[in-house]
Image (cartoon, rainbow, N blue to C red):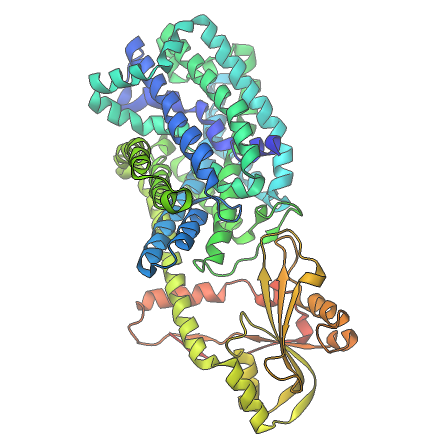
Length: 621
């Protein structure tokens, strides 16, 4: 698992040596100089930034704050909501904070693959001069292949990519040691005193440089979001024993090279290698950056599923790709949208240098959101005293706010791209949440109490149609719209009516003898029953199969053979927009589009197409 985690979780942060130090020395035409003071100051910042943000904040502290094994800003927001459940106003605010955080992460998910792959492919300019014009087409082909293999699942991708990343980190370490051997004194740069001296001597320069230094911690939020794919322990071991040492050795080697040969700052990573090794390293770097993109892609899958569960996105097709790990999922719709976005920014910017101006805004914004949520959950979750909260706010908050402020200067030069993407995601999520609330309120009014409906059917003594009617419905408190519509329009009810709810638990599998909760709704002689089906996260939500099992186990008083011929009725009324001021008209139209393209419950629950009917009534918003 630790090796597989290398292939998924650490690709993004693990490929930062390709461009981080180079970007620092290219700021504003080279205002950071290759002098000992500047190099030591920069390398000190590049060591202490991941130490504080990644090693301490994410790996040591935040990864303890999981929501049933899931990580990421949405899981953290959901955990905070649960901890503050008694304060309605605060839970709404926490959800908004979560929406902002996940929206910024989506912006990062689009920029990272394009930036990483382009930076590696552009190494061809160093290894084979004269073919640099092919960088964009080659990157586009590589990215297409990456998104094409996502359907095979994170676990299989990780097993394929893990050994490659292990080789990558070994190469980083060896190259760094080689450079370090030329000038061992660069180790002095690890002292925080050089970072402090650099800040004091050049406060404005440091502020600008921080916009590039942040590149050494890109991927920290993805690392946290991918926790559900592999678990806490494998990620921690990989970071402390492999990733962090290899990264620091390589940054030190690059810094030593720049001090020895100032012209090497143009591309210190590839120039760290001898001429004969550069082309193989370009190939390996390209493979590593493809893998780097995996971290944010799999993180986007995890966050999207969490957003669906929280009611912030419409139901999406989710394919479980592992029998053991509930976090390993594949969402086809998210994969397609990410691919289109990544391809668009690759073609729009055309180079990693131009993309670097767009990079960092969404990353640093997500870091700040995570710190804010951390401060909110730390007291109720771990009983942190006030002094510890203040210390965390100063250490994490001041550093990350500085990173964010430094990157805001990039907005006019490309930083608007991830912000625009984040704004689009915020719009979609808030629109879906508000529209879903309106529809639920209208449906609840139309559905009415299930207990009262059952009593009404008994009082009316309606005619009974032969056969079994199954009504998938989320709860037993209200009446399925399809059931009410059938009675109101046809004045008839089936001989057997089964109202079914499916509940996904946080274990891989639920045994059949523990899966069912039956309720005759107060009467055992009217043929109307309620059944709750619990399934594991690795179980396929197959209602027909579960009902046959329930019959075979005598949970339902129906023969399994007869249940195999049952009809299924879905409650899906058409959404009609009105002139009411419940929501802006354009948002109502957006909600209708989202609802129309949501995943079909018939496909999700494996309902037989020829015996499934959709009924209901119009719902106005």
